[in-house]
Image (tube, rainbow, N blue to C red; front, side, top):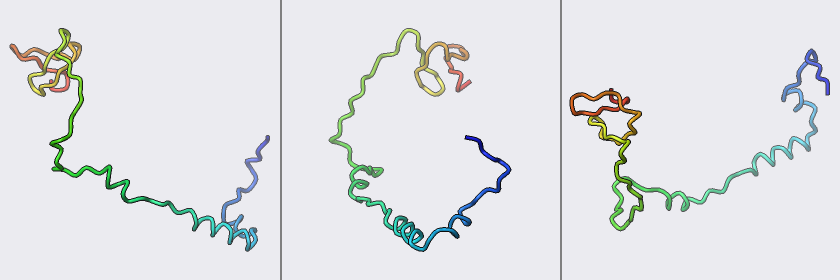
Length: 99
């Protein structure tokens, strides 16, 4: 479909002037009736406060030992792959982020 880009554009103010009173009332009713029902208990159950008692919670994480191609940075103490090794300062291994 061809579009005439030289034609004047219509905006909402032009369109509202041509609408009938019934259409405007219907739009107003639709806009007011579109409220969202929010259940406050859903937010309360998912909210964890700092300092909450988590003593009876269990953490299930699989921990792998350090691999042969990994090193522990002596500055940030994170385990990195050997490709992240920036320098060795004496016996200290330093990652690229800390170098």
